[in-house]
Image 1 (spheres, protein in one colour):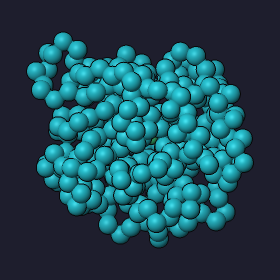
Image 2 (cartoon, rainbow, N blue to C red; image 1 turned 135 degrees about the vertical axis):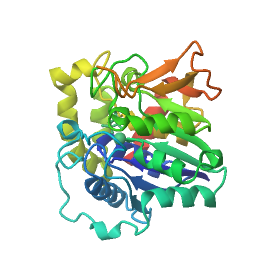
Image 3 (tube, rainbow, N blue to C red; image 1 turned 30 degrees about the vertical axis):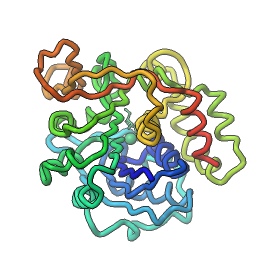
Length: 317
Ligand code: BDR
Ligand code: CA
């Protein structure tokens, strides 16, 4: 069985990615660590529990992590994911926060990886604060990972949060810097522009949500607001190249679940801007080797879309 540990800021696409993993055959979800990002870390814990409840999988442990970035100010994405981070469509019977584990996210991450050396694929779909803290506590952590899958960063300096930066990197640039420079393990990046080039058509989304299941009905409720936001003229400009929905985090998750999903990638050393008038949080791709780094990341360029759509479909069945 494939062991996954997921770090999330449970917004709408995080929820989609988690549901994809829960439905994937042969996947063992060892836990979900929560972090600030799309909304407060408390809301993230609540949302994660709601998603697990919708899939009748509340046995998956949920851990609470960092409430703030390492240095910068906290930002959120309420305009897109809703004030509560999950479409402002509350469940009357949502599980309480008492279901969150006592152990903190960073300790849990270190413990789980050390209990399963060489076996865990870590899927990071949020600001990288928990991962940065974990590697500072246990520098041997990356060497014990099977792989690290990150949704974040950008390759063409097209931002969705500031002019040049993608949300997960913009929300904690220092953490992104630490992770890209200290996780010297097989690293796979689903960057913003790539996810935009791999949009799901609105026809697909309609068919996806029309499935006659409780999971599809749950998704339709939490998805309404970000679907409408995605179709707004203002956001269309951010969503590079044509119309459709960008389920950003699902690409990183799907690539971790099925290692043959990415059919085209490029390997480069990468880093992130920490200062700059317009560029703080922007990912830097070292195509010519100026940084003299030996560690490179695999930057996804193209995925098998038919396979990806099948995985998404299965997520709501
Ligand atoms: C990323 O930012 C968040 O809003 C999404 O959940 C995703 O992880 C996309 O830039
Ligand atoms: Ca996310």
